[in-house]
Structure formats: C-alpha cells, structure tokens
Image 1: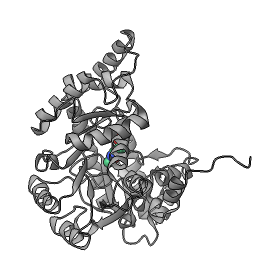
Image 2 (image 1 turned 180 degrees about the vertical axis):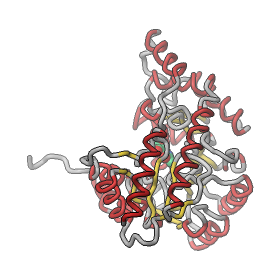
Image 3 (image 1 turned 120 degrees about the horizontal axis):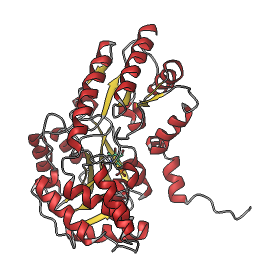
Image 4 (image 1 turned 90 degrees about the vertical axis):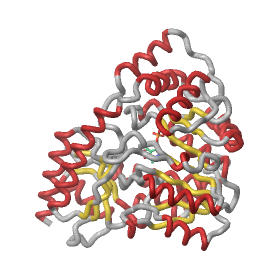
Length: 395
Ligand code: PLP
C-alpha cells in the first residue's frame, strides 16, 4: 500500500542512530537469536525468580470483585499516592505531597519515559553513566536529547564525583543526569558518602537528577541511600513494585519529586497511558502498606545465589566484582577468549546451552563482559555454573 504509514521519523532516527545499538531491542534480538537452543538455561532476563506474594494477589482480586473497574484519576488513586508518600517517608525520611508530588505509572519504564519526554528539549544534554539500562539512551534520543556518556569501567563501575565534575566542566550546558543504583547491569550500589559527594557536584552545576532506584529494596551489605535525600528540590525519584515485590507483569511504578516538574511529567503520563490499571494499583497499595518485608526472604535467596555464581565464575577466570545489590553479575570474560561479548554469548548458548546477555548491550564500555542474572531458580543456576565451567575449561 503506497500510503501505508512509515515508522515515525523521530523513532526511526532513534533506531538508526549508532547509540541505539544499546536498546532493549538489542537484548530482545539476542534472546531471539538463542531462542531455538534446546534445554537452554536462561540467565539473560531481568525477572525476579519468585511469584507475587499471596496477600498482594488477594488484594487485586478483591478490588475486581468490588467493581473497582472505573478510570482512576490520572496520577493514580489518591489512596495509593498517600501510601507511596508514607512509604517513601518511612524508607528515606522524605516528604512528598500525595496530591502534587506523586504520580503512579505503568511500571518504572513509563515513569522513565514520561520523565524524559517531559524534561528534555531538543538538543538538551543528558549525562548517562555507562554501562546503563538500555532504555535510557533510547528514550533520551526519542526526545531528541543528546546523550553524554561517562564510562565507569575504570572505577569499578561507579560514577565518581571527580569523573562527574570533569564531564560537567567539559559540558557546562548539561541539563540533567540519569542515575541508577543498585545498578543494572553491574549490581553496584553507592555508599552514603559517595552519594553525598555526587550530590555536592550536581548541586553546584544545578542539574535535574533523575534517579532510577527500582532495585532499592534489593541491597545486600549496605542500606540504600537516595540522592533525593540530599537534593530533594532537584531530584525526580523513580521506583516501583516490579523488583521489590516480584511484580514485573503487573506494570506498576511511581514517580516522586518537586511539584513543578511533577506537573509536567503528569501531562505526558496522561497522554501516554491515561492512568495505570486498577488491579495493579490495588495490589501495589497492599504491597506498600502491608508488604514492606516481602523482599527480605527473596534477598536471602538472591544473596546465596550471588555468592554461588561469583565463586563459580571466579574459579574459571572471570573477573567479577561482587555485586552489592539487584540480581545481576557483570563478569569480564576470561582473557583467553579473544572474541566479542556477543560472539562469546552466542557460543555459550549454542555449545553450553546457557543464555547470558552480551555486555555491550549496555553500552560500548561493556564490551568484553557478559551480564548474568542470578534471579533464576537455584538448581538451574547450579547446573548453569557447571556448564559454564566445562565450556571455559574446554575452550
Ligand atoms: N529500570 C531499571 C534499571 C531496570 O532494570 C528495569 C527493568 O529491568 C526497569 C527500570 C523497568 O522496570 P519496570 O518493570 O517497573 O518497568
């Protein structure tokens, strides 16, 4: 059909841009490439290895029975926004007004998209520490922002205040920064002192901070500090129940931040999704009101799996920084493998039947690494480590 609509030119530009090589599509296309491998153990997905707790499911079912089937207000049910406000107060001692400073979204993904689309003007520079969750670059480019990446690989994958300052000196017109910690794909978490040091520099340069803290409940050795605790007036805090309560499929996230930014974010959010789904909102209400400790037993299991994977990988020559949070290990391939991350991951899938994600899917600084998600079932993880050990020893 001659006048069949083509892909929107903004999107098509995003997809054709070189940086768009690090899109979620790249992770999906790699998964597709290995999907025909029989008996594959998939350690390449960012999925909690647990089901949603029963009390949360029950709350959603009750809400359906009670005919909570009408549109909710655009920023989400007030009751839920109040719960979110109380929850953030309890966790981080931060005050957000439920009426003007909280928006409930379709997962952290929509929270990020609405925030980027609402805050980026054509050509605005956005700082992105790399390696990073791939959606950041895609949406920044979709909004016609300019990505200024900072390679963190030389600093154990942590953005240092020095590197940040150096970058801001070279880019004094930068408008915002996206931070994510605990970090996907590296599992890195920042100490309170490190957050304080970053906040000092960001304050000096007056940047808007978008802080994706979706893994905040999943930290092992240290408590989670939010940059919003130091920069409440300039931070947009993004979180949700996907990872903390094993609710990825429910699609429920939230944004808290200063009212004047939230007002604009809410406009974009309204056009994108109108409002989040009702059963998910009632489930989240229960999760955040009565499920504050739901992640604790999961954390014990994740930690056991993390230690097992770290030890097994180190034994065969991977260079691994033991992660402080989330459920990912970013491992440097043993030196003897003289191939790209993708070539290595493809062979690992085809020859050893273990699926991992090539590190450069998270940015060029991840070349030479693979990301392993250890949220999978323990028996599968043990078997996968046996297969990886055999593969490395025989190659
Ligand atoms: N942010 C990061 C860093 C993630 O790793 C993910 C999912 O993997 C998301 C956001 C998306 O979260 P949600 O499922 O709530 O949209």
